[in-house]
Image (cartoon, rainbow, N blue to C red):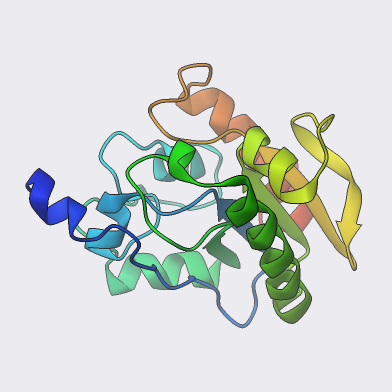
Length: 191
């Protein structure tokens, strides 16, 4: 599946629905959907995005998901059955996260708190330290488990899986995602 630049641009500002089931234990939070994600309707769908390979490498899912052409019913069911949910800080699609305003990120942080209060996952894992710092007004936050909670929900900041984030490999992403998944009870400490 491929899209022209014009086709992708037609998805600018589109909203991709959350993927959250009734038994969400671990809610991954992206910064915002990219244009490819909006075009396919599947979170983290851009070719080269390492989210699903990292989930698989971490043992969070038992097979590799390829969402680049959209999410299959079986893949969606796998995530939901495992207690995995996906949402975004900012719901509107853009070509790059740096197109978002500070105000959008702060408002997105407020709305995320509402979502977490409604869904009540054990853990949220925000994928991106800069977006987290802005959305929650915590300029000194570091990666990993945060001191803050949202109600009883533990907050983690994990690396962004975008291919633009060259500081991390699939293995380092998997390690961070697995730590949050262990706390959420999605996977066990030992493999």
